Image (cartoon, rainbow, N blue to C red):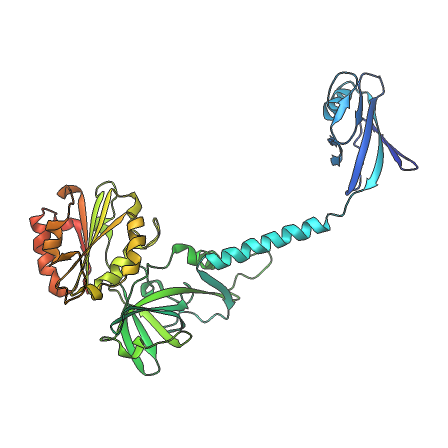
Length: 405
């Protein structure tokens, strides 16, 4: 049995080992003294965490045992084993309300969610279910001049949800060409950012599994729209209608064409610790997509895990080298950037002047042909030169991935 007595501000609670004790109300600070009926144990408290049957926690200091030197929990258990009676005399004060703490925790969780939303690189929103679409509204987020009057990097925010974009029309491989439309004007441009991370569609794919609460109908009630940013490699000569896009302007983005680069021949890390990427013309957009891909994600060659990675990049003259501001970041990712120009055209230039062959000859690369892989991202005019160069270098054809566009 257990008896409960009030005496002013004192609460006396007697526990008997053969019965369960009623729980004390939550939100009270307890100062307790514990005695056993046979006098074997005597403990007093100035405030530690004490735990009894039916009482989850008492916010009190540590109990000091006057008899055997045992803590309160041990004192109670020992009394229980001897089937003696334990008496707890406690002064009760109302503890400070925990609502403020609950509010703080809620605000912290909200702040974490907002930070994740800000840094994850995409937005998630519930929308009406519409199914797969051929064209998706997009908005220009920023415009960067790479080569004034010649080349721009235009960043657009577009739809990437698997509920609206079919897998065979999505951006899944570096080197894919995307279709653009604005009114009656259409164009095909290259993409210079890596394929969208697999993390983007995780919420969508979980939803498509149909994991729903019990008692609800297993039918789609809404769709998840996922918006993410995409870098377009826009040349004035090939897409003049889209070269002059400005921030905030809207356009439509269509399906990605199956023109991507097959990276399977060069993906094996242990077999190919040395990797060489050749880029020229439009191919620098593909090379950038490979270099800036996150290790272990879609379109990645895990460059940080290889022993030697080099990018050979040539252009007609120094001012035609695109993404020069990115070179330092690429070098930080263990990608050595080696550049060459056909001619200086009076521009200041301290590097190599010549073709890929001269750039190869002047570089200090040490390699084993059997453990070296190559990725060729050049236009048709330079492919014969690289085919001959790699053959003379002894690199087997099956160890070469070529962007065919």
